[in-house]
Image (cartoon, rainbow, N blue to C red):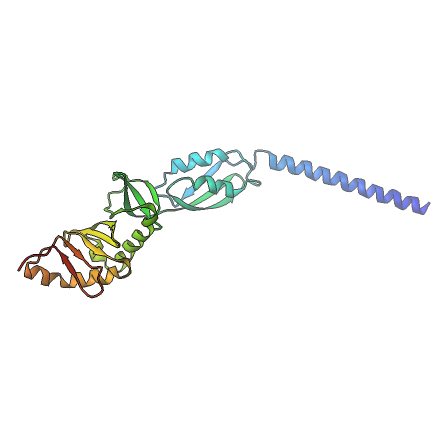
Length: 239
């Protein structure tokens, strides 16, 4: 009799546990599946070039989704399709909000491709078509094949860090067919040819020699700085 009573008590506990688990599951389903956690509010910050209305239009695909179960990686992937967005930080704001912190790609130059200009980021990747109405700042124009753009940008960034006075006058950098890079500026007003590895040093030496060059009235079709120990004036003439 005692053994039968224990079996009956054990069975009763199992039934009670099953009923409790079912009740909790039903309660959770109603709680999570209701409108309380339905995504409805978005707070976007950190964006300047990426338009807020475009970001909200992308986020609209997730409106009404359950915030508790919402996977943020999918939201981030969709937002990354915006050409100006480099990365985002997402945070759920219960009961029904999502905070979006945007980090944008920053343009450092313009790239010329088939007669069209696009903003270029620090990794040498085209961002979006250039629109002077959106940004009146002046940018150096870069010309080269897509695989050459990262090195062109590195050259520009090195000059910007070490020869800012020259970059302020620089208008264009292009890849030369015989190696190195050609630059146009408003100081010497003729092509200046350099190698990336010592461009900043050579430009510094050229700037230092500028008073002497001007005093002697030397003119040239181009200035070649690609040689180790000399400055070559191509087609030079003068006093």
